[in-house]
Each structure stands twice: as C-alpha cells, then as structure tokens.
Image 1 (cartoon, helix red, strand yellow):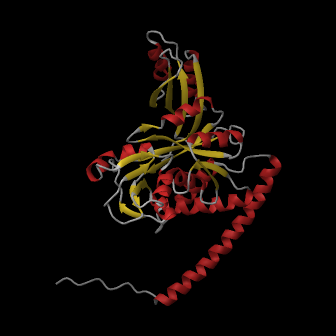
Image 2 (image 1 turned 120 degrees about the vertical axis):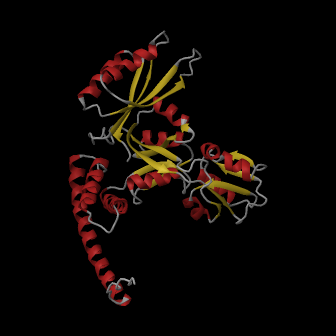
Image 3 (image 1 turned 30 degrees about the vertical axis):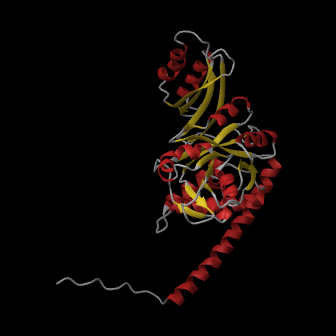
Length: 368
C-alpha cells in the first residue's frame, strides 16, 4: 500500500509575508546603492564624452547574472528584471530618447521596451518614415523599426528608408507577435470594419475570411492606431496586442488569431554612428548590407563569389527596385559574422570591389 509523502514543513503565511517585506526593504536599499554608483558612472561618461547607453555592456551584465543564477528564478525572468534595473539606473545618468511607431500599444513600442527597458523616454511617431527622420535629425537618440516578419517577409518601406538614411543598425529584437481582435463590445456580431497595419491584416487573412468574411479590412498606420479608432466606434474592431487592449479599454474578442502560430517580427534598433559606433563582436553577430551591381550577365554570381570563397554565410538576400526606370535593383544582404573577423573583412573588401553601390547598414549581435 502506497503512502503519501509527508507535507513539507512551512512557516505560517503571515510570517512568510513579514519575511518577504523585510527582503523587499533590503532589495530597495541595495538598488538605491546601485543607482548612486550608476550616477557616478554617468558623471565620468559625461566628462569623457563617452556614450551613456552601451547595449554590449547590458548584455555582458545580464549574461554574468544568468550564469550565477542558481534558481528557482528562470534565466529569462532574471534577464527581464536586470534589464529594468539597468534601464532605471541609466535614466538617472541620461534618459534615452527612443523613437517608435505609435500610438502607445504597438509591437514596436514593446520591442523598444524589451531592448531599452521601460525607463526609456519613448517618442511616438506616425510612421516608420518619421522614426527614421527623428533619429537622423537628433530628436531621438535611437529608433526602433520593423524589418521583417516570419509570415509576410520584409517590411519594404524600412528597407527603402535605410538606403539613404545616415543611421545604422546597432541591435535587433525578435518578438513573438500575437494578434488579437479588439472591440468595444465583447462579441463578434455586427463588426463592419477591421482596422490594422497592412502586415497584420495579411498575417490574419485566413481567420478573417473564415470568421468575418463580410467585414471591410481597412489599413491604418499601426495596429495601436487601429485600436484607438476602434475605441470610438462600436461597429469597428482592430487587430492588435494586449498592450493596445489595455491602453484603449477594449475587449479581446478573439485571442491569437494570426494564421501562423509562431508568427515573429524582427525589429532593428537604429541610431547615428556618432551616437553609438558599431558594437564590438559578441560571438554571434550579423552584418547587414545594401548593394547593387551593373546589369550584365553573371553579375549576381560575381556578387556572391566573395562570400563563398571566404566561407561567409549569407542569412538573408532580398531585392528591391532601384526606381530608376531601368529595371535596376538593390540587394539587401545579411551576413553571418563581424567585420573584425579576418574572413568577414576579406569578403567585404572583395564584395565592395564588384559592386556599383555598397553600403553597410550595420553590424550587431543576433537576437537570441
């Protein structure tokens, strides 16, 4: 006959809560001690003219803390806590101005918070064009823009804007994107219009065709903008995340309606080179380029040969019309590696030699 294990001895709930309260006070004291040291670091950086925000330093600290973690807290949760601690301390040194696609509640906002922490000073823009302009003009020190989606491919407008913008990429964020149907009323009945960013509408087209076949699909500048508009009209619904539902007081009528259960969007973190130079090698880096070649037989083959001969892996290859009227194209390429690696540097030098146009968009750590 089996016997149940003896219950684990435990202190009374009231006593445990007193213990937690005491630990919280210790944590608060230690966090303020850390903040005071961070303020001193900020003064040194200000005198030296060195950048306040160093994503490589943030990554190093979080990796070190995770390595020391023995549980029961899970590593992703430890990382999230420490990112917020460092964000709050950085805000004491110098608040970081970050341009994102608005209004509040967009996935772009969520990506910015994941990268910079919630203490960043977010500047909401009506389009990715405005994000690029605000970052290049110095209104914002950094910007966050959508680059590609696992279902719908690249965000074409972002690629076009990179072509002539002086900004470069210093980081990336990959978000698992879940689109929800949001509405004033908690019902699927009598929905006349569904509003969302064009990419979100495309990512949910099968569900919309099955459940709301007669509703108009109306493209807007962002999913959060769609939620804002839906909050003012009972016949309208929006595709957006949970942040937007909370922001605009909407019901989530249907959860996670994207056609691909593993739908992800990749966001790029951009800035001027004088704000932050190319990050040092992390051991797992990506170098992004835009190039063009003269329209002749074998030109694309010649473009790829320097990569093959130097053992450099290409992880993305996209073409965009050059808009010259001559059927010319720009090629957007992601390479595995950092220019500080000799084989990558050699490949890039040889590649530049066969290109009519060549621009490095940035080198940055690959998002885990």
